[in-house]
Structures are given as structure tokens and as C-alpha cells.
Image (cartoon, rainbow, N blue to C red):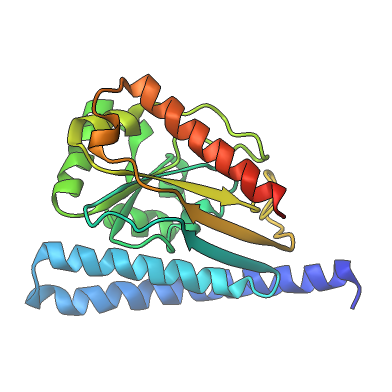
Length: 249
């Protein structure tokens, strides 16, 4: 089969599966929580629900094979405490990739995901935070409560996808949260998905997406930093590692 036709066939298969099975998967996963909810605490029910969202994400990613492959790597053991995952942002596929880092996770998202049919209510029910739609102090307070409950936070501090291999500047709110709570920061490098899909397109191009966690920054590493210095440090760490990852391709 010619490459163009093969790509068209695989993309068509992926989107048929995505749109046909997402309502089914969301319903089944939600029902699995609803059925158990009367017999467990609300906190435990939310934990199950967020873990099932990660299952959903991995299932959706599996639909893209063999067109797209995902490799996940931890460069050092992760702290036992709830973490702040700080990720670069190249593609609309990035939120699905948060199915790979361990732990119960709530994502900081832009406003548009909440407007999506099915997935928007799903994310809202899971407690995902649209930090642009609320005062920063409210976002910090709600995130701090989640960390106290043992929930990790995943954020994309560029705010919007770069759509290239050049990272945009970071916003400082997630680093204010780190300084406020003392939570460990785990930088995450995402490489290879700037064209999966390309900005302005829904077509998945063939490729391998690599997700790599860097060694955590603990409170003792950054307690004396200002937010600007901390975000600059994490930005530089992610940028330098992405260059090493891509030089090895």
C-alpha cells in the first residue's frame, strides 16, 4: 500500500474507533465508579475515577498503533509524595499522554477542553482545573487541597502548544504552587508529537512519541528560589533534555 493511502487508512481507522468507542468507554468507566460509589468514600471513588481516566487514555493511544508509538521512561525514581508534573506542550495529544506518569493525577487545562462533548463533562467530574477560568488564588487553593489528599497535578505551563521543537516561555502559577506547598516538581519532556497531530490539523503522522521524566526537584532544592528563578530552572532543564533526546534520534 502506498504511504499516503496507508496513512489515510490508519487515520480513518483511528478516528472511527475514537468517535465510536469514546461514548461507550466513558459510559462504562463512569458506571464502574457509580456502581461502587455507595459502598466507598467519595475520596476513594474519585481516586478510582481518575485512575480509570488513565486507562481510557491508554486505550485511545492504543488505537493509533501502528501509526504512532509511545515510549515512557523515568530517569530516576519518583518521590512517594504527590507530585507536580511540569510538562512541555507540543500537541493536542499531550493530555492523553498523562496516562503514563504514575499516581492519581488532576490536570490543569485550558478552557476549551471543558467545551468538548462527552470529554468535557468527564474532565470536569474528575476535578480537572481550568486555571484560566478562575482567579489564580482559587486555583492555588484548590490545587493545594488536592495535593493534601495525595493527588498529583499535571500542568503545561507554556499555556498553549508550541507546535514545534522550540518551547515557549512558562507561566509562573504552577511554580507559585510549588513554593506554597513544598510539593516535589517532576519535569516531563515530551518529544516527537509536534506533528501528531500538526497544529491546525487532525491527521496523525507516523512517529514515535517519547515521554521522559527528569529527576525531581524537592523543596530543599528550591525553597530559597523566587517563582521566576524556579520556572527558569525547570524550563532550562526540560529544554536541555529535549535537545539531547532529539540529537539521539
